[in-house]
Length: 342
Ligand code: 1CP
Image (cartoon, rainbow, N blue to C red; front, top):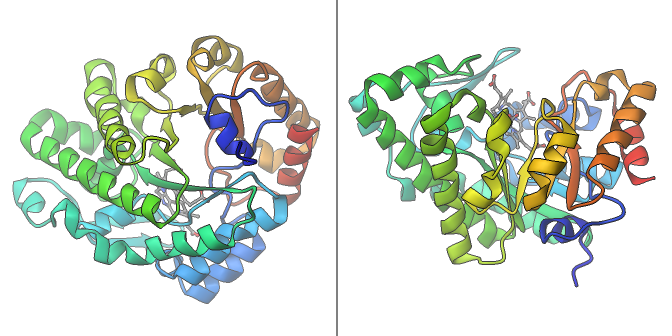
């Protein structure tokens, strides 16, 4: 049997101490991350520098001994590999060339043309597979098609994903062609990560919560199902974590319907409800509010214990409900890990 705790939880085992990792665990709250990013020049140069990307992936493992490392990259590298322009405005976030009509779609590359551009990412995975401690699981990832599409359509992050909803409703053929292209590119990208040594895949659907009813089925559930089926056709034992963030009641049955081995819960989800309605079907991940990494103290200890206790009767991976923020205190992460493991 594998000694990797994360793999054991993903195979459905209930463990006395949950495996732990943290979304955005390599990030700006760590001084060593900021130093390495400065060495690379900027964020995208860091993503495409295999030695330095592997270095920042390893930093939180050395500091905290997390049970999993997540490949350092970004969900927006796939649009860039498909031919979109991508840059980061300092202090603001990502900017991309926009998809607003069929002519913009026609300028994109086919799904199987992404690999040259993404080769440095596969190289990062190879370095990590060789360098990680034997008890640490390597997670590869991609954005889910809807979330990636929201950025490609709007050309930036949006609070309500309005431009993507508008394209879906007014030019469904353009929208569907984009979703299909992202889906195929994501399958190719993730299979290449697995071939390079990723042991688990996580699919981030950060904006799934803005899809309602039949739209949720068509654009969150169906693409996840298609991607997971394609991954498992190639690697039947590959565990997949799905994160349909803010799916609310649609978290129920999401694992079964998509074939995901684990469903990641955001911090708006009540743990008692999730243990009864989601964890019954298998492993769940989550869901401490990232704000506790800023505020710390007794609240952090109490909330960490509450979450570990509530999920203790089934398979559980301890994590935050979303990414750790740049203003977090590294000492609070230490306290969280110590509390969850005690
Ligand atoms: O300045 C910096 O150093 C950049 C900050 C940063 C980091 C550390 C960005 C820009 N991306 C990342 C890395 C990243 N992004 C990882 C690496 C592994 C880890 O978790 O440690 C991962 C898994 C992601 C995934 C990602 N990127 C998501 C999905 C998860 C989520 O947070 O909801 C999304 C939506 C993005 C887009 C993105 N990239 C970066 C930013 C600031 C954003 C959000 C933009 C927005 O909506 O405004």
